[in-house]
Image 1 (cartoon, one colour):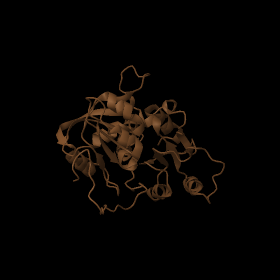
Image 2 (tube, helix red, strand yellow):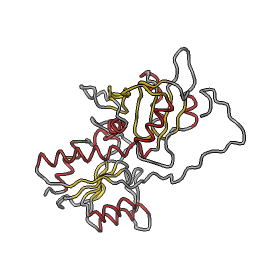
Image 3 (tube, helix red, strand yellow):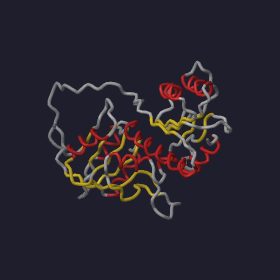
Amino acid sequence: MPVLSEVLTALDALWPPERAEGWDAVGTVCGDPDAEVRRVLFAVDPVQEIADEAVRLGADLLVTHHPLYLRGTTTVAASTFKGKVVHTLIKHDIALHVAHTNADTADPGVSDALAGALDLRVLGPLVPDPSDPAGRRGLGRICELTHPMTLAEFASYAAAHLPATAQGIRAAGDPDREIRTVAVSGGSGDSLFDDVRAAGVDAFLTADLRHHPASEATQTTGRTSPPALLDAAHWATEWPWCEQAAAQLDAVSDRHDWGLRTHVSRTVTDPWTAHAASTPIFTPTHTTGAPR
């Protein structure tokens, strides 16, 4: 069996920490470098439910996409929920490692996994990494559908192919518009609207779209039609990476004959737990198409 330091070296080769954004907090949060690693659990969020799942599984290492302490801390007291996570993991000899924005821009990265879940053909990064001579790394992906769909059809298709959440998929644009090309970005993506418009795609699928940026992005300018927008749950757009990441570590384990057992958490840690459809007191008029 490998020791933790060997596995961490492999993870850093897959998602080099130096490629993370300056504001990010990636890498190892806790763990004994000399401890043996047999089981590894992948998840999106390092919350208590996931820590408890790692304990039940008998995992030696938990790899999450989101950081536990993104903004730093002055305490790991078990009276705080993050401190309780740390105490749970250390008490049961479970290491925690984070791959966040360094996994977003990797090749393959988070958006490749999102595109794969939707069976989209990846054409290249939405925002290329200038340090990558091959032009494959970067933020987001530009993709093609296997066959054209209307916006309404593609929204339903995405809802059926991504993990189920209370939010589902929201769409902005003419429901009957034909969609052939789409940009995708796992996680919060409304900072990428300029890049999406420059790419000339028919639609943009991401998460956490806010009212004002989305409203501005759907306005028509000149002869160019703005892209349709599809807003999925943040957790749902990033969960496919867990399966992709586990498969990548499996390949490393096979090459080294480590015999690691990797697992992917299917615990839904999206914070939203219920959705109620609107019952309007009046019939709204949409400039982007009739209400469906």
